[in-house]
Image (cartoon, rainbow, N blue to C red; front, side, top):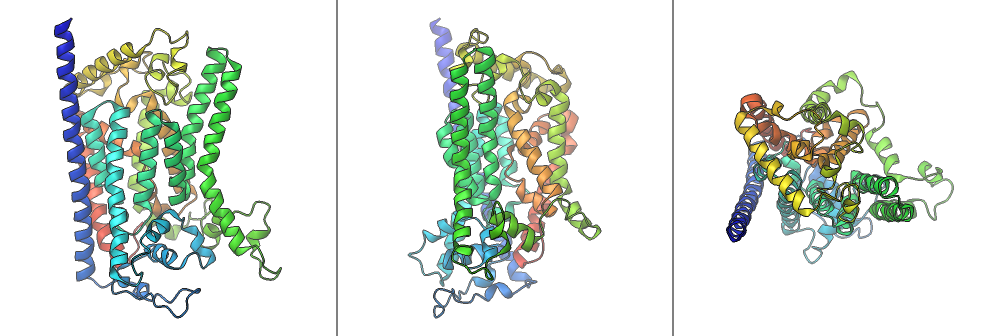
Length: 493
């Protein structure tokens, strides 16, 4: 017994040391990737002339018409970065600026001690976003390790994120880095059982990008399963009602910042205006400013982008959409019972191993009472051993289709990945049918299943090795094109 305890301690110590080394590698990779992107941006901006030079025209704020906002680095600001910097300097002056949510401008406002007309202000904006990316990469690794239970796959997926196809946006004055940080932070605390902290992160993600409110779907998925288990397995109606109430309250907290920003826009644009001055959306039954702006100024709407002249943009988005489709289809074919039942028919012992489906209290019901903490640990150990053997054999087919045992489904094919795939599927459909489709590359770049699936198929070199090269080639190509085109005001996603 003492020998077993000692060997367990040695094994645990080795795992912690291994995890520390991986986190150090993730930190180095994230920093190196940002330095590489910034170097490429500076290089291409130096040797090429920008397509549009109007960014350097930065008139004074409406509130302070005599103040100058000119900066020697203003001509280095491109595309939506112009809006974010302008909002940080002058606030929301025009209707269309409300399309850009306030988290990034508020973060830049923290630099109010720096004169906004100096290069230091713009450099600080770049610093904030690149620092946020590094923190997002660390959170993503911890999320992947917690959910996949495989350090190698978690590391590989994180490296793919560090060099993702939309990397240029994460090193520019865009909201992607802050959004990814809040998303991955919320997801990590969600899978670890810290729902209150997850709600805070998800609410902040809704302050960075409008699709951040969709992260409420994770809490809704969990609430649905927990209330179902309490009502039909434990026969405890009061507990089920309590779970639903708490879930609804947490969901409302995630939506609250976004709705508060819409109310702020309504107050600034609609309140106190004469009938002739009032905007059309102010008279709507539900005066939602964001959807009106997207439709009027950017032409966003269902199937409105399905035009022959937009075919190049569909081709530009086809790699990321194809990867999203393959990740969902592969999971659905491997685990049809779990996928099409939304996890309700997943094995009970598998759902009891984590908090995505059940809480620690609910997993100790009579039906799952035999599955305690020690058995979960044994399942994980056996699961990882089988997975390593299958990787050595290079045969994913050694895992039986829809086995009723949790030990047969490690990593990417575990039931806990399901809500992340459902979220990805909804996002991909929205990008394809509603949005400017070329934006899909950066719109989906903060979706973990893309990197988990890519890392998963790379773990089977004898079966999928060519696809590993294709995925890396795709990322490198888009990093190069993004640095070349985006930094010089040419269209890119």
